[in-house]
Amino acid sequence: MFGLNSSSNASAWKKWIEQRNEARQAYEAINVDHARSQHKEAQRGLYELMRELSKVGSMVSEPPAEEEIEREANILRGRIAHYRTAGKSEHPSYLAENSANLAKLQSAQAKVSDTAASLADAEKRKPIAQKALEKIEADMPKATPKALSALQGEVTSRQSEIAKIDAIIASMKDETSHASAIEAEAEQAAAAVDALEADALLGEVSQADKSAAATRLAKARKASENASQLADKQASARRGLVSRKSALESEIAELKEIYRGAAFELGKIELAEAESELAKALSEDRLKPLLDAVNRARNAMNSNAPEGIGYSTAQLQVKLPIMYEVSAPQRIEC
Image (cartoon, rainbow, N blue to C red; front, side, top):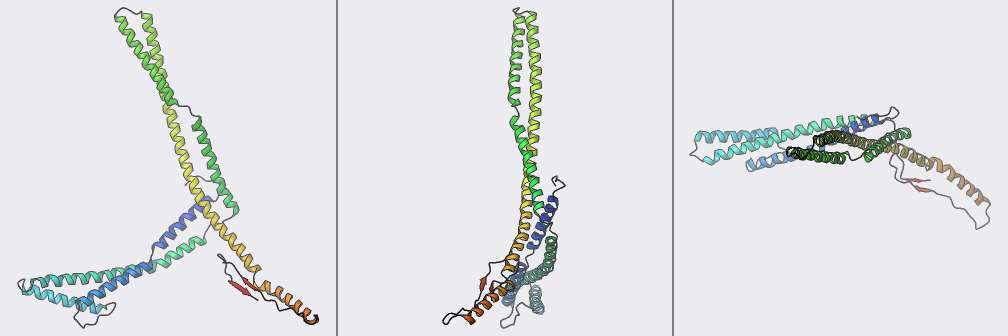
């Protein structure tokens, strides 16, 4: 869980969205229709097998009854016992055939039993999962403009941190190249010392020159060591900054998802209010008195109108738009 300012209810929204998604997935994963289809398919397969195994003219229920299945199984067991007693010399393939048929019958019966259990389990768990989902949805955190503003503030805060990190990384000097240059200088100093040592053996160089070269080499090696340490430190700092930036980007993505969820729920509330106001404004209770007033005025005019002049009775038909969050009639007539 990322750190959140105390003024924000992002934690509550994050927890609610996670719980709702889990509950929704659990609810949708229970497919009663699929389980019922699998059970019917198993029953149909058992029925077809029973038709195939039963004597011509025998009645087979659809789905087959338990006593019908047991009757057929007993017939097959009797045949198997007979052919085993008779020995392999008498119709050797019959024993294998009837044994295979009994195995197929038992397998088909087991499949019906298993799919029946799966269907019963799905039918039992579906309403439980639905109630769990409905309870979570009913416990939704309050969606308000203030909550959205707080969530946006969390995003902005992290974006500011990322901008600072980018600025620091951009300002970093390339210490690796600097360390490489100093290391090259140290190598050159070492080469110079080697050359002076060789010249000393030949008697072509003074002790003072050798001492100066050794001092230069020591300084170069120390500078190279310091530069290498600085380059390692900078690389470590850069990796830390990049890691921090990546974590912030992940938090921003998560916060934006939470924001969208909260904004959608707030939008539903606002849409319901707007649709409710529209439905009220276009309701028969409001429109009919206005229409009645028009018709009373027309009737009064008709009483005193010159011959040949008349006002018809006003009628009103209103077709309402689709309402997504409130219940309202599609058409109003008065």
